[in-house]
Image 1 (tube, rainbow, N blue to C red):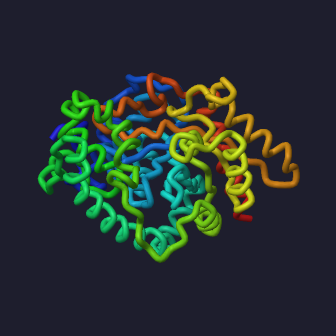
Image 2: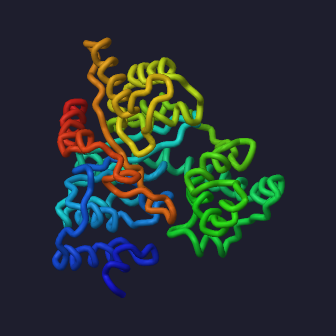
Length: 362
């Protein structure tokens, strides 16, 4: 098998992919470009992404990027592979995670730029008490959501179902997130869904159906506090840096205005949040102010820091949130149509996170 395929093959083990990475590092020179030096929000096939951790790091290398965070949903499974691939390709890998919460508009990122600290915790199994119960509960949730598909879409005059063979055909490493449901549905029925006016693309399908209670979504049944504040506190207890992912989703999914969004930032900062993803591909024009949302979120971050001079200042991060899903239209280090802002994707972001974590670990 050609190394470009082997490095991205979910059917082989991580060591085999890393051996392919070594050969590619010796044979390749960068041949692509990125808007940002660093992309601190991406996904591998250990959650709902299509690429292996090694392949994501290779892509960052090909784009002349200096740093990458793979923030898979609710798991740390691919971090060891990503760290080793980073050594091979000369890309700084920041171990990370993205936790779903019990609020539809809030996902909490966790960054662990101090790799030695992260590997120590991982080796001790510290994350398992949170990760494994969530993993088990999600499988029950996802099976229930799959069962809702035929009835849900028959109400729209559309026949649809997802079978085991569809999951094997269209997914890279099994089904582990709601996003995987959207990917299979779009891969199997995308053209017909678009013609019927049901959804425009996979992201539209996700927003309109997969995450909506009246269609496919089901609650996660688990005896665990899933509030955003609880995840912020857990990440801090692990010595990591919790952050708010894509804050524009608070408007999109919860209908919050800017005043309420700023209050969410204040509440999460009080719980221990350390950073905000001020720049992301979802950011457009704010309907309240007419400002670019990236500028708006940066102003909110600065406002919080100004109004709380005795608190640890909130840091800024960026995130392309690329999954490399078919039809997604996102690029690592670039966003959609290269709409990320390079000033928020500098390597200095990573240095700032590293310094903050080392300070908090003292």
